[in-house]
Length: 222
Image 1 (cartoon, rainbow, N blue to C red):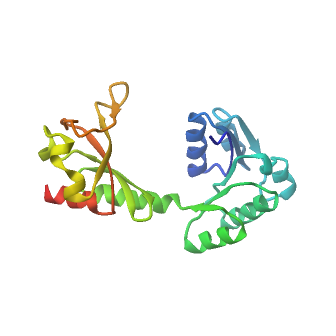
Image 2 (image 1 turned 120 degrees about the horizontal axis):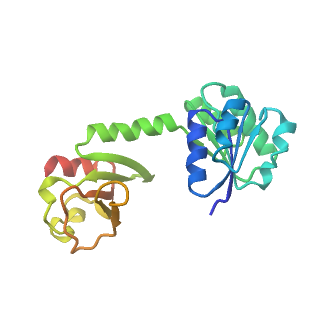
Image 3 (image 1 turned 90 degrees about the vertical axis):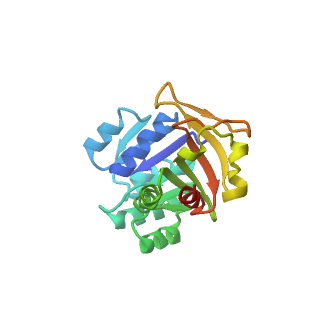
């Protein structure tokens, strides 16, 4: 398990990332130039540091080579800084660098200067949200590999009362149900590992794996 992550840049994305990682028990070192952001992150992170990460000497004091992951979360506010910080992290021996890009050119530059992985959270969310509003019953859709997506959708009404074996989703739509979530959010919600005998109940949320568009095809045809 990744134990220690440095998050550089505490804008909306970086702050949300740091908070979510800390909530998962990861030791997070949050970094930004702004005192207000550092003070906010200090409330939930293991450490919060106010430095200018584009200064090599200041960045070196964070010992990036000894951290599991360094995330350059600097975004639209300063693309040049994100490129400089990513390059410095590479020079300082960071073992895994994840950088945030705002467009394809930015992504290519970040990769060229040393990022091991580049993410574009706005684009990723836009693509996932598009699936949600375009597909009836879909709650979320996440790519999990080349040509494979995980779709979370409310069980179509026509399937309620039938077992998974009876509805035969793999045979009819090339979809595999990997989990079923049922109950209300919070303590009443539980995730059930599926079996052929599992009977679909009203309000069940199906987590299905298949090719892009397969879940939409199922929703349209049922």
